[in-house]
Structure formats: C-alpha cells, structure tokens
Length: 284
Ligand code: SAM
Image 1 (cartoon, rainbow, N blue to C red):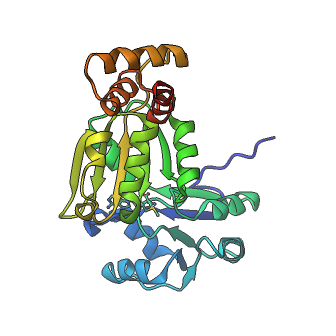
Image 2 (cartoon, protein in one colour; image 1 turned 180 degrees about the vertical axis):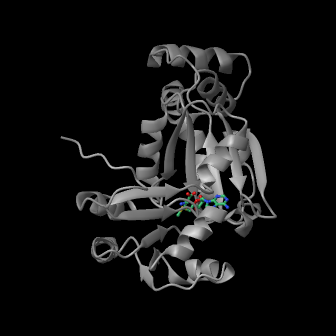
C-alpha cells in the first residue's frame, strides 16, 4: 500500500532542496531565505560559494559539504540528522540542485529512509534560456553537458539528431566553439541560440543558425552559457546514398563548389554533413 503524507503535515522528516541565483542575488526568493533561516544545518557543494550567498543574507548555520565526490557519505550524514529531528536544507551553488549538479543521490537516500523531499522554486539557467530563445518551447529535451571527449560528444549528438523537441545544452566557455562546430557538423544547419551570462548585467542572447554561431570568435564568448538548438524539423525521409550522390552531381554540374554543395544538401535534407561528405568522396 502506498504511504501518503502531505509534505508540510504529518510526522516524517523533510529535506528541503533550495534553488539559488544563477548570477543575480536579487533572484533569491523571500521563501528560500525564510526556510534557510529556520534550518539547523545547511548543505551545499562548496562552502565558499554558498558561504558568500549566506553571508549576503545574514544566515549563519553549521555547514555540510555534499558534492559529486562525497555525496554517498555526506548524504548518509544528512539522513541521520533528519531522522534525529534536525532540519536540513540542501542548496545548489547556482540554480537547481540535481540539474547538472549534485543532489540526486541525496534525494534517493532520503526517500529510501522515509524522508519527504520538497523543492523551493528559483532560477534555472536552462529554462531562462529556453523561454527567451524564440525557439519552440512547447516540447523540449534537456541534455545538459555533452561529453568533453570529441568522439563521445559526436556520438551523443548523433543520438540526439532525430529528436523533434528543442534541445537544451550546458557548456563551458573553453569548449563552446568545439561544441557548436560539432553540432553544426552532426545536426546540420539548424536555428540555435547561445544564452550567455543569464540574469547578470552582461546577459546576451545570440540568435542565428549553427553555421553562423560556429563562425563567432571564441574569445568573444566568455562567461556561462546555455545553447538552445531547434529540434529536427523535417519529416525524416530516408535518402539512399545513390539519391544523395545524384543531388551532389546536379549541384556541382550547375557550378556550385563541392564544399557548398555538401553544405546545401545537408541543410536542405537535414542530414549530417559527415554523411553527405562521405558520399561526395565517391565523385572523386
Ligand atoms: N544547477 C544549475 C541550473 O539549475 O541551471 C546548472 C549548474 S551547471 C554545473 C553550470 C552550467 O549551467 C554552466 O556551465 C552553464 O552552462 C549553465 N549556467 C549556469 N548559470 C548560468 C548563467 N548565468 N548564464 C548562462 N548559463 C548558465
């Protein structure tokens, strides 16, 4: 029989997850401050980041560090404290806990021990970027970070290529150019948006096609970034290699360079440029 108990009634302990600002401290909600002030212990990834935030709001509580590398151990400690009647909140360094950030194992561990979990709303980089992107927001897929390794990143993109929903990626500034180029190569020339430094004074939305975004100087793409990419819009017709070869021949015969013909056909048919390029080698 499923046990039911309202989150803010009953006797079972409750873990609070708290979303925190992603750049603009004014986005800390009054409710988050109120709940954090009521806690016996606060937990987060890094005492420096959350320490600054807590200092700003005049909150000073015993701190438990819980990050990717100690989450199992730290979550056991938090579970024990909650079971002993102490109040504990877990917050992210920025945005939502568990969204490309630790917290998932802590939540699972709490649920296994009959501890309820509630999440206080707040900022989230993916949703801010999506909402202002101008791309279809009715259905979306959150990918978060792609692999930092070239081959694994391409494989992940290949898997995403046929998704119809808008896709949301997180990326760090030192990999942004490589990632956008890989997206262009694998996904074709789709509309995309780089949402940079969200909620900060230098917030910027760069809207264009993947080809246009790939041409941007990496030096000008600093800070934190979300990349939002249009889903696969064509009804995927299966094109045979022979059909693609014929289209390439027609384009090249009409005077288009081989490079432009590959780009045009991969964009028009929404096919990975890699495949069209491989077929073009048969012409040589
Ligand atoms: N938990 C966070 C959330 O809910 O959005 C995400 C944390 S993840 C470790 C960090 C990544 O989120 C960054 O590399 C960047 O892709 C994105 N991000 C965080 N803050 C951002 C901001 N102010 N502007 C743009 N992207 C941001």
